[in-house]
Length: 156
Image (cartoon, rainbow, N blue to C red; front, side, top):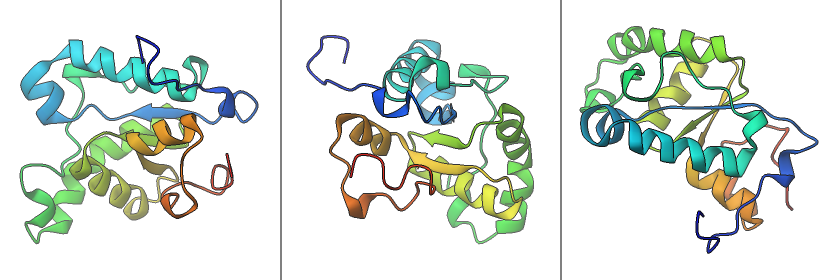
């Protein structure tokens, strides 16, 4: 993206003004590469949704809260405990006012999607690759499962 080889753009969201926040995955950011990768993540997000349509969580980057889905917790068979642990993340997302939570990690996606449904948070959970494809104009009809009605038809 920085070199111009992957030509994403956020024009699709100029008039829609759909707001997005992003989850900082524990393994990638908090436990491994830290804030430099968190900055790269924000660079990509802003390029695909528009800088003016990005709302950061507080706290964020390497200080962000864990969603509660990693480390095998999704498969632990203890959904009540997992959801209670994730309540802090749910509240954090709600405070942003964003209609979408972007998740670059599959565990985060499954947990944050479940938290929205369980706590009736009202946000949609979307994979980062979905928005990259949307911004490139190559998102297929069958790849829009997690998009809300406001984005289901964009680019078709």
